[in-house]
Image (cartoon, rainbow, N blue to C red):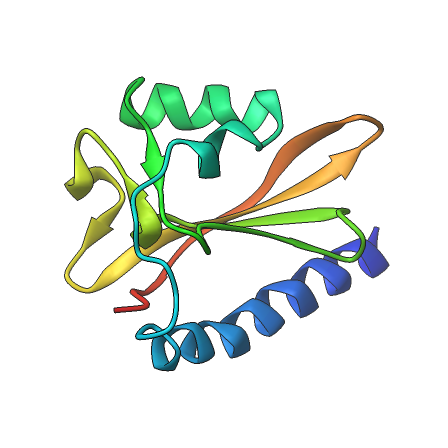
Length: 118
C-alpha cells in the first residue's frame, strides 16, 4: 500500500512538472473544445464528469493523460468546459484528479487544486 501511495505521489509530481511545458507550448497545441476528447475516456470517468458538469461536455486536447501504461489517468479541469466553471476553477487554481485502474475500471484516487495551465 505504501508503494502505491508513493507511485501516486510520483505521478502527481511528474504531472506537476509537465504542466508548465503545456503552458509554454500553448501556441502550438489545438485549443478547440471537442466532445471527442471526453468520449474516449472510461465510462465511469465520463459518468463522474457528467454528474459534476452536466451532459454537454467538451475538452481541449490535453485535458486527460495516462501514466504508467494506463494504470493512472490524470485530468486537468482547466481544459474542460463545464456547465458551472466556478465549480472546478477559482482564483487561478483548477481541479485536477488522478484515477487509478483496478481490473478493468478506474476509481478516483486523489483530487486537488493546482495552478491553471493558462
